[in-house]
Length: 137
Image (cartoon, rainbow, N blue to C red):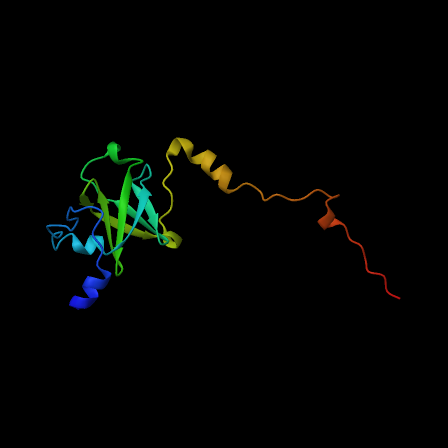
């Protein structure tokens, strides 16, 4: 080992020791070793991650968090949502089984008109409506 070090040793470009003096706390290590993504909260304080909708639980109406960037941490299937260094409580909804949209009574007619609108039917001269029988010899 001594001969190897004498033969291949190189003086460092900077003599300052760049090693960390302290390690992160044990509480922070699971966050460091997790997959993290940044998401934006909607007006309803919701975000979508892996086809699941996460809605943030708050004690009062929090308008400050609308449109805020949050960090979603996924470690072995355990999801944590972090906003400004604090963990947020949430409830989940499956995108496919989401509860029906709540519509104000003043906007109910407009909402129903959009939902019940007749499907588009092409005009008579549309190529799909043209019938050309195949020629039989």
